[in-house]
Length: 246
Length: 246
Image 1: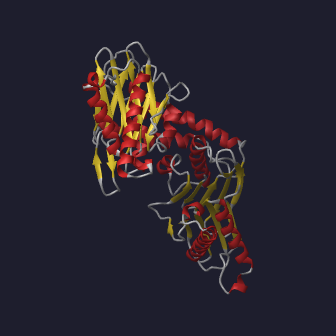
Image 2: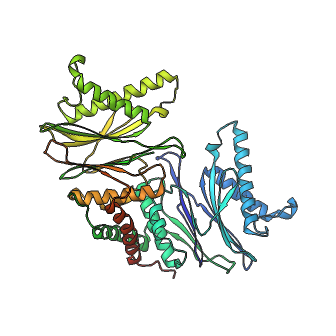
Image 3: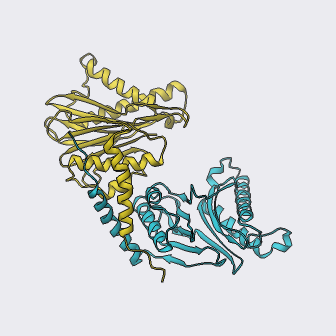
């Protein structure tokens, strides 16, 4: 499993992903699920992936190869496409291509086994910051003020706190705290989501990568959030009035 | 879908279930998922059900029929079985029997379509209060101090708060508040879980039903918990230290 969250704020975009992959509970590994492309001053793109690891790695490899040898192909790559919408289209097409290829090769009819979904966000010069949720079929939806964040993978445990505490005016410092609370609830509940976590904070209109950090299992701030949140939650709960049995 | 929680406390057992069933999002109905049997002064038994409604209703009907005409069958019914363990065995066997019957009749090989799972709790004179999670295969596990509560149905959204705030010493008034917070998070996230809610509070060693109440959608306490929890959660979140970007 996986847990990734992308959040659209007034100040920019926040991305957080875990790094655990597993084939059964007795076979776990650490793999990066967050990938970036940058043309400083022109674009910053972040992609987070969930689902079949062979599929998502193939997509990222293809996107990379094609961004290097794009002229030869006569098509634009994701570091050249003129808008975030076109970048999302390229990623979606590549994802669909890889899934079709793997499904065809194996003779499997179930596409589910090779499925993957992705969160893509960033900004291209001349456009706004945008964020997309890309489906295995290659199509995608965009984050809006009504739905300003996307989750992929094990989304349920960590959703209620985001729904309650999200605010587009959040500062990055608060947004990271919010995501850490959400990840902490998920990590505590699902063994197939695991530390370390990858973080990227893209500041709107900078058109270059922002703070990128790997949050290790012994991160002191994460530990403080994890233990502090239990206490605060308990206090919040105690402060609600009790039910009356009368 | 469904959401039911059974919780074992020092003071007794708490049961809460939703009442929504659905066949697709465009076909929803209200059905009770909590059932009780009582021999005052001798036993109180509560059963909550999730899964295929035809299966769970058939199980309850059979348990009822057999508790009326038990002598004729030469076997004990759930109002006669000498212990909660024997009651759980009876319920598990009946569940397995119904699933096997429906699977056989339809010629379907997939047992999943007719599957169901259940939470059973109560007390029989001479025994302790006990609670069981019963699986479609008819087997079951018992709640213990390590795992003092069971959830069936849409368990994920509402689990983190129970994990954080559960305490065996909770008073019933606090336990109901806790379950309402857990149900509120679930109701907000999954349309297939819906009001009204059914509640039963079994007080240990009374050997008769305790407070039983239906919590309607306009219940003023539930509304207070729902809105109050959002604020308290937000306050708790604000009181955590912010992440440092340095």
